[in-house]
Image 1 (cartoon, helix red, strand yellow):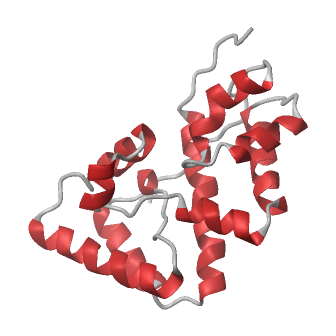
Image 2: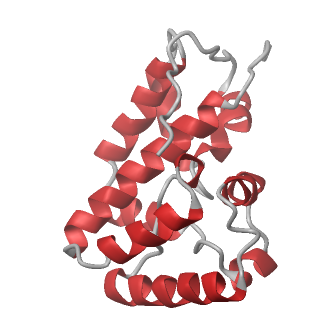
Length: 177
């Protein structure tokens, strides 16, 4: 497993709420509300402080909001999700782990595990794919199917935190105003 980046010292843009959301709204899959709420904690000394505020928003969110955030994520290596259109971030992340180049047997394994996982937990399997290879992801899917639902929801939110951290590390923010 690769290590997530250190965010200390990364640039953080200033600006009004619409500029802020325009810059960071993609950090959480189809859920710009997280970034909108984090704006209340501005200004941010650096990207680590911004990320801390984003995670604080998730901690303060209702159970229904957290579940909606988790459900906003696509299934991994899923042809229907790909056909419907993954976000640019999700498509690049899945490609980085080789999930866009699966053999027929690998695709079948992902499909079966995605189905079993969604049936068991009511939301898609979430992992920070940029930190893993496809074999690691498949092994993790199998292992996590044995977890309790609340444990798995907490794990999904932890992975979303890692995903947002990786996405934030990829941003080169210039002046916003």
